[in-house]
Amino acid sequence: MKALARLLALAMIVALAPSYAWSQSTDRSAMDQWMKDSANQGTIPVGTKITMANWQQYKQYLPLGMQKLFEGTYFWKMPQDVELDVGPTINNFLPTTWKNATEKYGSQTSVKLLPNGHYELVNYHGGTPFPNPQEPYKGWKVMTNVFYGFVPAIYVNSPSNYGSVWAIDRFGNVNQTTLDVVYRWSDYVTDANVPHNLTYAPGTWYTEWGMEETPEQARYTASLSLFFNDQEAHPYPDTYVFVPALRRSLRLSSTARCSPVFGFDWTYDDAKTNGFNGSTSTYTADYLGDRKILTLAHFDQEGAIFPNGYLMPLGFPKPSWGKWELRDMAIADIHRIPSEAAGYCYSSRIIYADKEHWNGDWVDLYDSNHKLWKSIAYYNDAGPVPGYGDMWDGVASMAMDFQNSHETVWSGFGNPGKVKPYLDTNVPREYFDGNKYGSPGGLQMIMQ
Image 1 (cartoon, one colour):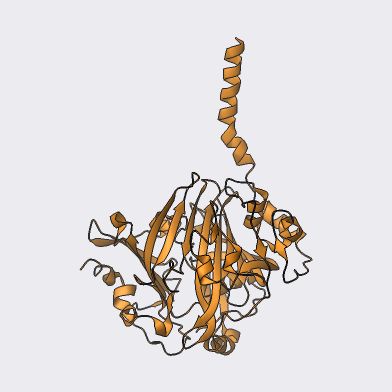
Image 2: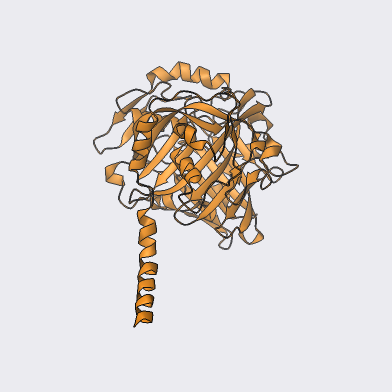
């Protein structure tokens, strides 16, 4: 009888373990508490080293998801030798042409709330839509700044400087995928010396094309997303996937915004350098406040090569990347509008948006039960770009799934001996072919 009782007790423990672990998950209210606790920020002296021994002194400057890594709340946690070396803040992400467009058009951009609850962006013509977002709809304006955050007019990872993705599971297994990427503004172009009147994707302002090069069994699998100017007529981007086995492309349903891109930990709503890839029509945001947040903003390219530049198994940047900067950020909770929220994967997208270039540098994602699901770091880098001087020149990202204990690491900086992404006028001329790299018909050219 005693043996039977022990077995029953053990069975109850095993049965209750998942629900107990679930109950320990971080609730959305923890973010609101952190916002209150961090209301009176000071600064961090240059030269400060943040480690496991002293990180709690600086938690007011860390995104909530990064705090959970330090706390060791989940399977993914900071290694004991983690070190964040604090350096000076450098503001050099924006070219003059973008600043000029913001100054010229920013004061006339506005928002209209439509009878169906959707939002309409009015009189946007380039640059940052709302350089100083204010009420009403301040959270939506922050979100819109992120959606149209600055990146160069054309960004390319090609076979000569391919981007790499590493999928990491809880057992330490690492699988590499290499990608060709062509991201391009098709309207609202402000960069100099690149085409402005583009017709390859009529009615769009942005196109995203990506194709797998390796592993061989996935080669030629490709994805294309089209972002439309009229987001009321097209409330979600149109996305097509080319399937090599079928030798044709398939258009994805709008419900596929939660689908993983190429099987990675980013969904289609995550997969952009800015941290939000949805829509300004059917999404809105609650403004939570402004804070100074630590991030990596200027990289040593050779110091960021995977895996030597990463603390494993987490895949967190080593000090070889460079100095962490304390940057001004607007924090907002992005979510679907109520009429579009049913069935959507995320109840909250807490975005930490850099107030210079308005890309999101960190995102905490909550599931439909308001529990922390993922955190995604978007380390936006600035450096010298031929013909432009210093400006945004690439991104590295790590997407951590806390609930399922796997992770995806992206580097747009290639591998040893490779180069950074091609940008604007230094892009090989073949990638200016918008029909091939920015239209549904171009997907049919992949295996020809």
